[in-house]
Image 1 (cartoon, rainbow, N blue to C red):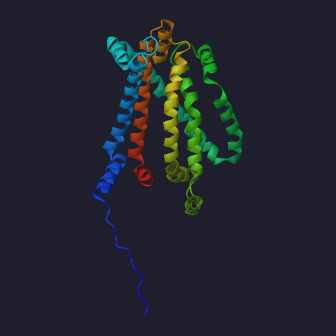
Image 2 (image 1 turned 120 degrees about the horizontal axis):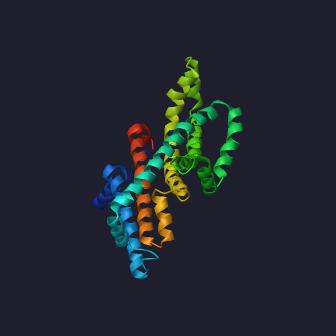
Image 3 (image 1 turned 90 degrees about the vertical axis):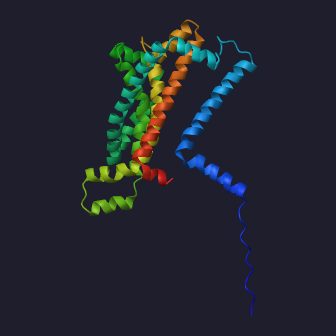
Length: 279
């Protein structure tokens, strides 16, 4: 009679290892960890910035310290916040317009292979044009108002929104599309009840890429033919060699970009909890 194979006794994991694993999972999975880690990263970046100015004895007109930048902001809070509001409005308007125009174009691209082959080269051509070169032309065509800035933001955001939406809709499983068609669903029902649902994670990926480009677009447009906005503040600061004011404007632009990005992240978590669970 053969002896049964010997089994190794289960080895309990040390308590220290279990505690370390629980801490890592708390940082990765909890809401508090999702907030704490970005804040710690920002604090570390500011500390390194301050340390560089101290260790290398950099003059403030070359690289102001965080303390100098904060002091400059508190010297002119109303002015800087007013210019931030102008840039924020241009960014949001251009971003919303890119969604309103870009998503229907993506729907058209997905609907027809012929249209896709016609439109894609045009999209690539528009995206390849340097946006800095277009900014003066927009001022000539539209004047010195707000519309050239909004259109510049639209041009910056348009391509990633269209591409991500189209690719997301194409990723819908074929068997589900065939099942829906077998139930006599219309093309409209197919798009809005099936394809849009499967495309939403990729759409949000495109939106998060586009929102950062939107802030860049507003700054580019404010460099040319503008009298308001943080881009105008940076340009004027360069002309007067006020580096600290320029860094204060750049810091506000960075904060605005971070807030808009994480607002989209929060919206994605609220609208697509099923997508988060599947990751």
